[in-house]
Length: 374
Image (tube, rainbow, N blue to C red; front, side, top):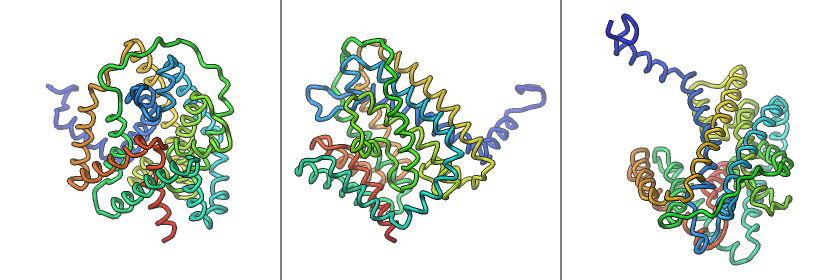
């Protein structure tokens, strides 16, 4: 009678917990929930963490730019609004996407390699200046070589140390030293003059699920800027957030209708137990619900940070870097540390050279083109 309920001992409770965590359905729901939460919370660092010193930064992310101009809370609200509206629209059009995506995929599949090649060329040419294009090409090719070597190296989960090196650690290394005093922040609601940008993001999120290697919202947004002017950082944030949310939801449709898992979380879930059409509605519902909770947490954290009046997150940078190094070693061994170090060196290049960091997505694009080419 010493257990939580009569006759239930600690060993029984442990066996029940083990049973839950080993159940594919429970694990699948847990993975989808974490995937949705990550989709919402990944925009918190792009506004509040890794903020560079504006006097020395080569380039500043749109979220950081709004924070440094006193519009941090507005940036958070734009992200939250875009995530909620775009995910709701994606859920609304989800049944139609199940019918439409196979048709579109059958049209583009025979030309997948030239389409990806043109996309890579356009991505590089967005730098416009010849010197910048050349430097972007170097970054793109180096990242692609890293991708080819790591994916075929036999290293366990090589993409974690690769992406940590290409994105996370360079951002932590260049963030402002010491405490960054924030300017006076304005507490104002953003005008809803970016709804057309959200609609565009939903469309691009669905179309991106047709192609391998084109999954980064920032990467897709670069292509969008060729057709639509996004002069205000607010519009860029709205576009990136709406692409991220809709791309994640339409990835369910991609997996079910054309058999392509464009998100790692969905590939893992499908590996646990092949998804049936009857499962999709539940998983999309879980994703949408958890995304909404994630947005609430995102806004709560944003308001708490802005109440501080200054940012001292840079003091945590060495701890975060140490954590990434340890995780890379535990997940991928010594090979993972080599990938992490190489990725960091490549990831610093676009920052120092003043070109877009999205060019490091050559890590995925070049291996994708090699795979399509057979």
